Each structure stands twice: as structure tokens, then as C-alpha cells.
Length: 115
Image (cartoon, rainbow, N blue to C red; front, top):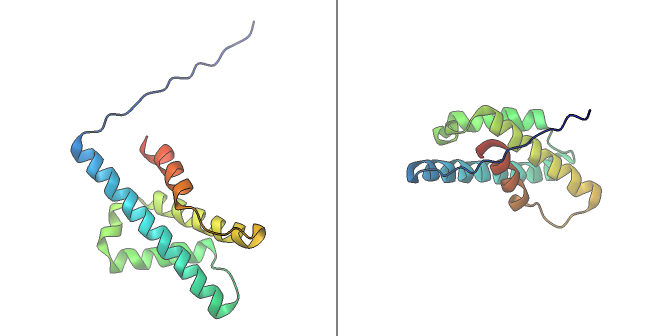
């Protein structure tokens, strides 16, 4: 006898307020991502080393203290953004990619944390 796994898909229909909140959180995640990439570039130019994920997380905590709007994002989301920025920067040097893709990251953030 074979056991079958069943999967269900649900579609979320957020209200107008929920849509605004989700858009605001995605905007803040994008801002953090862009700040981390810029910080990684300047750190690499200054030291010749890449910025580690741990240092990115420490820097994010400093940003949260300076700019309270970033406190709206959950800490795990911020850690995931720093992991993705660190991986993107690492892959950039390994594969010599032309750009970092915010679009790919935003789609995975949407599917992982929002939906």
C-alpha cells in the first residue's frame, strides 16, 4: 500500500490595509538589501575582503537603532535579507555575474514570509 501525500494551495486575499503593510515591509526589505550591497562594495574597496553575514547582521542592528522604521521588519526577515545579500555578493565573485537581482530575492521573500 502506497501512502500519498496531499498538498493544498491557498490564495490570500489581503485587505487594503494589509496590502499597504506588505508593500511597506517589502520596500523596507529592499532598502536593507540595497544598503547591505552598497556597504559590501565599500568594505571590499577599503579592505579587499568581503563583508561576512555576521558583520552584516551587526550592521543591521546599528541601522535599526538609528532608523526606527526598520524595526517594523521581523528580525528573521532581516537575517534572511543579510544571508541573501551575502550569498549574492559571494556568488558575484565566484561566477562573475553582472548584477545583483532584487527581483529574484523579492519573489522568494514574498513566497516564504508573506504568502
